[in-house]
Image 1 (cartoon, helix red, strand yellow):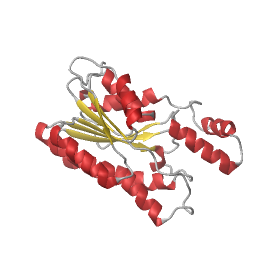
Image 2 (image 1 turned 135 degrees about the vertical axis):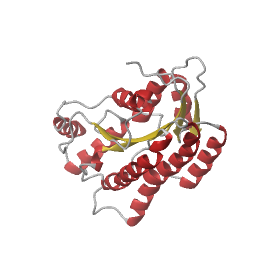
Image 3 (image 1 turned 60 degrees about the vertical axis):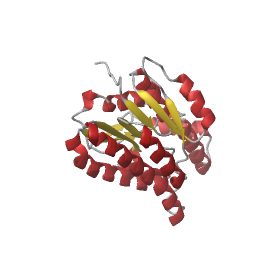
Image 4 (image 1 turned 90 degrees about the horizontal axis):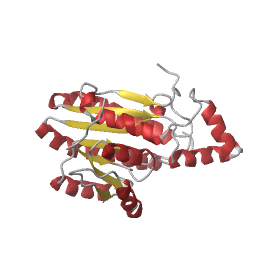
Length: 261
């Protein structure tokens, strides 16, 4: 099966590194026209140069800071006035690590703005367009911690669970318009984010990062980290016509890490 996203316009958050970049590279390879979103314009410009360019593709980027919700609103509102989005990938950098006894109410509010409000706002803008064409794909990059909370990621556990519940509710409301809404439960991938979290845990456990990483990999049945391109393959499938009957789903990609059914 060949994934064909020709003529589709995709907007991807957090797309200058890690999983977001992998999604952008893969969807561009499948023929989609990509708009990147991140806060570092230098990295955006570099990533733009790496995207495959085929006939009629005119990739671009938006400079956005997901931590500045007011500015995010303004930038996205302006963008949607003159741009059509067929596929929206909600993906942001994760909130700070830490346990349940370490975070304040302000920390939770900041995480809510970062993970939930940006996802909700971008999605509702996209849906207004998608309803006019009876076609759309909303893909939320969430985490396996929604199903099995990780003690050192309380902010992510909490707010991403809210995103998943909201997305499930939304999926039923927009299904009659040919719009699908799905969540990807992200496992342990070889990304900058995982390196940072690994170093954080190594310090707390008073061991080396190498020892911490070995312990982590040992918990994964496949005994390896995921490759970002593998995440891009799944996202591209969900964005395609081949996945038109899949909606409201929570799909783990984790090498078998989750133990629950």
